[in-house]
Length: 282
Length: 317
Image (cartoon, rainbow over all chains, first blue to last red; front, side):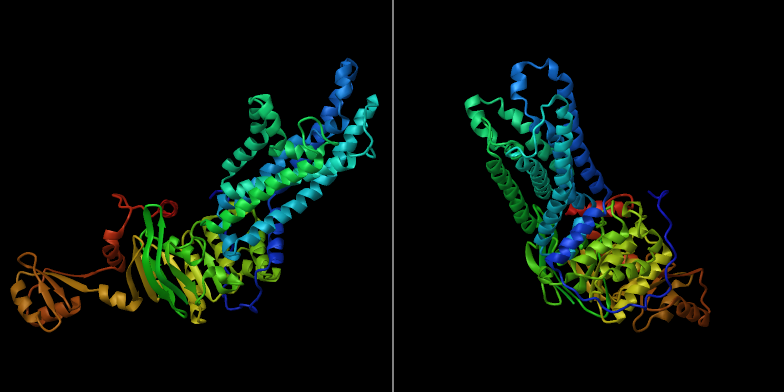
């Protein structure tokens, strides 16, 4: 650090020239602005959001291209169950990882660096910080993931049209599913942020997040199917993914119910984070 | 004005701050002195509402920190452990803090020049040297032009020029009637900066005393004399306010007279001196004496490394 550190410029001689005293007060609006500044001024934010977009679109395109190339070799039953919507949005499962990691980092990064002390001395009531962070991240995530989901869908369908197996955007339920994909990613970001706020450690936050999204679902599969089938649709990952489906299949929730259940998880996690934020020492 | 009243903070079994009561008055610089791990940082965190006290209270101008509508305008704080995101530039760090209070951007740029960080304001704070980090922390503390400043080890990592700069700055701010409360584990630094001292050890108050009083109390001058005519010398110098002790034949330890006075008296009486040494008890030694029993981390080697002290305070926390 010492070798690469830029040299300190010489000091101004006098400090007498103190200008008019600024007088403001802490407002939620101000905290929102502050959180927006914090979000855009970190390089990691831009990389994680770019990764979300690239993974979501990229894996959707790959999935569709693979199906198109193998279509002639697929069995009739495989062709019958083929879901063109699902395939073009397959990348969302990977986008989840990037947007979730960023959600965790937005909070745990402050704890890891000590920034949280500056933040909480500026806003000692604390809660406006959590609301500000969540609101800014939700808006930014939605603005990024909405076009991402649309691009993934249309790019995927364009590839699938090579075998005439695409689905039209005007098909009932499709617009809702594409928007649902963006909504799912946004809620994932908030869910991860809540976990980060509860755990206050990057490693623990990311591990817990990945565990809930990727490890728990296969574990449930070990249970007797009668039990697993009744739990499975209500897992956060499965409930959330139901938001990007058309109607509902066996052992999945409807898109609306999926949204309600997953939003419920997000609300519980954020509420727990809020309670702990006020109660615990920084 | 900072009021700390019966303040106690326990972390599990460990008591970091133990029934502290003191007042920090405006218009003077109050030094908060204690060995590493004695609870200085914890006390400051309690005043700033970052930690909740187990017992007692800490208020600034009569209010709990959490109740301020505009805390940055009331209290400026520099915490010892860096409180900056390493991935963010100095400019954006200050801007984000300013925006919470609606403080304009012009104030941010003004402060960046004030602390001399113009050229590196857009660089990521993680690349800053310790001294530059301290300057950024001081800029953050001054952002809201507060009446009260709470600075934890502000001279850590500053070069001599930076140390003089912050000392002058603090004196100017105190002269304007502001309340300045700064911690240090170095008595020598406090001796040239502070007007008043609050000394703690193991979380307990040891002294709450004006610097001048503390100095006069501890700078007892002892003059060591070696003379073949020690007994005669003793007889001629004894008087009101003069104490003479002898550890060995021919050796005198004289209190209450300067070495010049002893030498002159000896000459007047034609007494031979072989040695005449004035010993001054340094404030650092006085501080060590005071806190010896209260030092938590006793080591055989001197360990006052910054990183070390930080770690110890954190372990203490």
